[in-house]
Structures are given as C-alpha cells and as structure tokens.
Image (tube, rainbow, N blue to C red; front, side):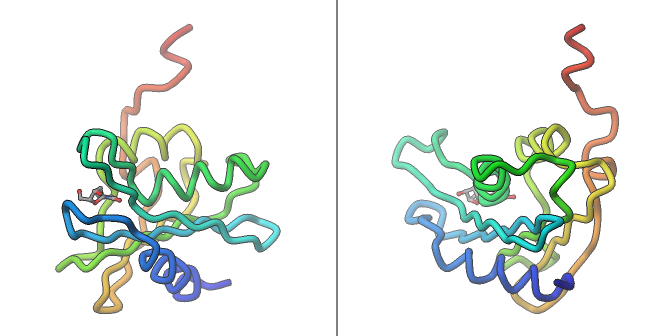
Length: 133
Ligand code: THU
C-alpha cells in the first residue's frame, strides 16, 4: 500500500470522527507490515480534556489487535487544514513510544497535500522509559 492509499484510509476514518464540540474532524490510519490497516478518528466529550485524538486511537487500535512497533510500518493522519495536519504534543509523546523512530508518518490535508515525517523528527530529545531507570 502506498502513502496515497494509506491517507485515503485515514480519510475514510475521518468520517467516523465524533467532534461536536470542535467541529474539527481528524482521521488516522496505521499500516502494519503484514498489510493490515487500523483506523482511528478523534472522539470528543463534553468534558473536554477527555477528548481523544485520531492518531492515538489508531495506534491503540493496532496495539489492541496484537501489533507492536516492530510490526507497524506507517501512520497517516488527515484533517481539513491549510497545511498537512500535524500531530499534537500528546500524540507525539505516544508516537515516540509506540512507533519506531524512523517509521514514516504521512501528514495530510483535504487538498491532497501530503508531508512525510517520523517520530524522531516530531519529538527530538523525547522523554522515554529509559529515563525512568
Ligand atoms: N486532534 C486530533 O485528533 N489530532 C491532532 O493531531 C490534533 C487534534 C483533535 C482533538 C480534538 O478532538 C480536535 O482535534 C480539536 O483539537
């Protein structure tokens, strides 16, 4: 599956967004090395801090189906943004722990623009489990 196809899966996931408060729908998709796709969308709550981002839902979906970072090959996310949508800080921390640091992350928008990055670029000098030793 190429990056355009993974972004189109994220676009499908975006339709599942529950975002009545922000009206900002985000979709995400994880591709595994054996070709499976796990979707995520942002799910909001009237108690705002409980809102969960699309990227984290997609990553947790993959993990809950038995996949770990070594078996994950890419993440795509999409929203209706001027520039390709960039993961929030909380998601960057989760991405840095649960995806390989060089796994491609495709940030996209509804205009068809795609920008490629990875966990290392998104969160240099990340805090990690090693710091707890
Ligand atoms: N959101 C995401 O799902 N991913 C991001 O990377 C940025 C923000 C969601 C959270 C909230 O539901 C809405 O977008 C507005 O912040």
